[in-house]
Image (cartoon, rainbow, N blue to C red; front, side, top):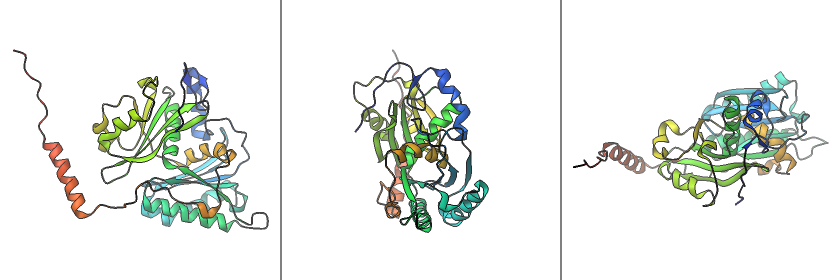
Length: 315
């Protein structure tokens, strides 16, 4: 586990210490394709990013560098992704005037997330990578797997900057895992950029407070004003960890975020050959039995029916 260290001042999207004005100024470039947390000279990269971990399909083409053109598509995901993903990719390539063989890498969210969505992404990425084989690329395109929760955390940074909010130092990425559970991971911003503090895992909503507290050293200094809880879980489960301090940001992993993370990850040698484009499931079980669903329903009803505690009267 890698601990990030804190110091005075806000931390901008490149991991540098800055004042609030510098962080807010980055909102101007956030929607255009801010690169990863370190400055990377990668304006000539041609990347295709695919995100199918949730019920939303997100695809983007670009270099991942700030201020560079980016072509995006957002639409229904889940089961529909297997039908629409390839036509969407073809459409974006035509719009950008690129060919598959011109791409430098394929970037995809490897999970955790929807089992069907992850399998779709892996299959399509492998097929495209092998389809680009030629004399110059006998093994096809290189593939860059990115954790879905890291993409969610990166997207939350862009949304926070666009809204003119303070730069978060610590980010809890929370994704609905269904079956009464969440996928969670913790990240911090340091000089090294967006650093994984606690890897993706399953967590019950009622255990989020303990998980978040244990993700950090007991003596770590922090400010709840720069803690950010980001994800798609607040409507259904937010009340179960309402005691956790910090800002809330509704966010989903996106292909834009994958592009932003890609230049630094490629420079660090994290790309893999096509046959290693594999999903990160975290959960091995895809569905509950009827008995388990009924037990969960009863537990939820019991919690709702439980009387609220009454404070004793002063006499």
